[in-house]
Length: 507
Image 1 (cartoon, rainbow, N blue to C red):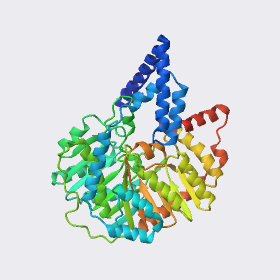
Image 2: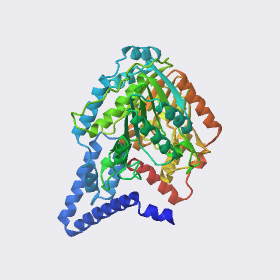
Image 3: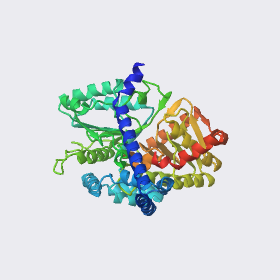
Image 4: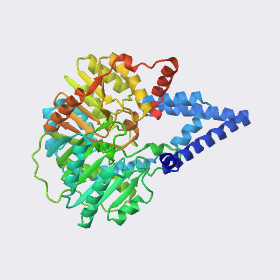
């Protein structure tokens, strides 16, 4: 009863209630207007038609276009106005230019490693075109990097906390979810101690992912000497801006060592709590040049909330860390306001580059036509394509949609498994013992198109082998999925799954 009352009067419940009231008010108003006059009704129909033409001619993913066109034509009276109401409130082009300019400016302060790009292209010539494309966006290979794959979340948290205690210059933390608990208490104790010692500590979390934190949380942190900001604070307004979440997980220490991947700052990610059984996550630790790149990524987001004249701190390490490189690395990040889909580009390149095997872990499997077709083609051309998804779902609708995609992929020869101990939250690609990607990018529309994301593309070295070794361990506790497992029973369930798949891009 206490939990129910706490949820009922929580900030989240209030926000949901206000959103529902806005939606009901909008629908009711438009419906009444449509009944009031034939002229108003005709005007609304014309607006919907013009909006359909705008959607079809836009550069968005075709799956988004189809979903919106069906929604607008299915509700022709107010469908067009509803679209305009949502998308007229997006970030301006000026905001987009500011974001890209800050990243490019910061990336130019990084060591320009032409030798690393030449080395990468000479060893992996099939990557040359993708590297050229990424180079134009400011993402460049680093050869002075030592990488280590860390899984599950307990291994990452222990390694991170140990390194944080050794911070001397700065600590940058950027996470989607920050939740009070044992992990946060252990982390906060170190951050306070380091701040007192003169280390610059900056903390940024997403306004929706961490919506349950108290509103005065940033002020609490500032009083402890920790600079704190909320990225895109969640407000109860129907707007596409609220879809642009900071889903990245980044920790940088002195520009010498950094972490990124799938784990958030919450106890379930390190299995202190078990809401969905055993939580399996993955992070990548990088030392050397790649750590400075992740610091620049952090600052590019942090600077957006400050004035144009705000000084940029020195984020390069005071003394270049002496590390023994063990492969090539290319840290990257995604910007949903741009037409460039960096995470999706790297994933598609991995699928098309695989010759022997392609092994994928993802908590969600909600794909567009291009990625589905590429996975099918890889499997049908003889590549051993295996995908592991959770056996325990954290969102029922996401699991239901995933089953629809699983049925098609299984019929094409893709092998799909469910992680029986619980929920697998790792976002990893590994192929041919030579390439791997570890980051925050899920295989769903939100990660690939509407979220800010980050990750590291690896070629050669110990971390690639560690990622594949972990995948084999995951397979040993996972069950293969059969085509009959994906078929909903009953006409209503089949209809419901079809609708979920159709409107998956809008969820």
